Length: 365
Image 1 (cartoon, rainbow, N blue to C red):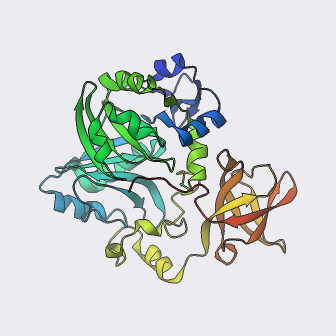
Image 2: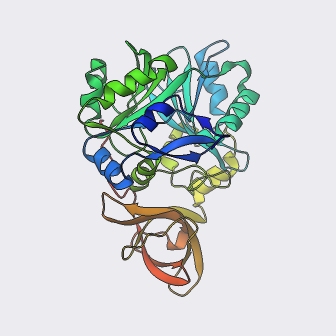
Image 3: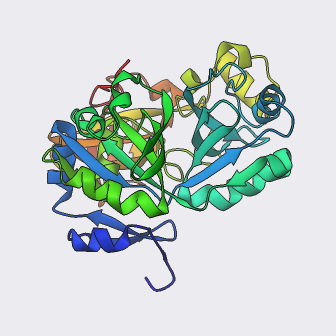
């Protein structure tokens, strides 16, 4: 743990009883009470997550936003130019082979784009962006990032920032507060309504304490963050998607707008081919029979014993009270309801292909 980076709110997490573990080069709180309790609290009320390990980046145009948008669009099959001011969108940096370098969120904040990237890809992403966008890329190094998630998230945050009550899913705004200027998006990684809040280092502890003093808000660790996103059918980079996975294989074609389906981005040859003809494999939901989870790396087989895929994420879903998983299977075996078998400790146990998400999203549209 000595070589790991510490979150700005490290001492606060320890004060609240966090068990700290290494993750993506950081010392992170994996749980405060228990993964089960924290998961269910977030689904019922509101959970506060410290995600300051994520990378925050400003893209400031050298000339104008339209030119920057056109340059940014060459790096991913997602429309940047059509993103309205005050709105955020899910994006995918792709490589020349059509694989996913990283998935990210980006927002149009009027005179610049604000980008949030994954912690494990942060350095590589910034280098990649800088190689293509030059001095328009400005890493943010003086702000923490908190996520407030759950059906009571709006109630809690509105006591401090009333304007959030007018926000829809994927809206962004800046609010001047006692904690400094907050960059707020109505988004998250749990399938629940909620917010991600970028806050200056100097105001981070005050904001966190103000929220945690509210009865509906509890501190939530990395363990519940993972089980929540798995139930929501959301990908974890490095597990469910990586540089060898295309957006089409991953079932992320909803993120590729019609205007981008003519090419002009990294990896367009393979991605467009798969959009028109289908990929050889697909990411699917999986419901193991019984109570034993099927975790990452479990091999999947057809009824006749043919190898057809692999589990990429798996665990117990507290909200569905059963094991859930995601993985990749050959396209011919990807239909919902298909029975497969996962090899667990030498035994092949039944598992059924299921629709995603396992728990319906409850975003405020």
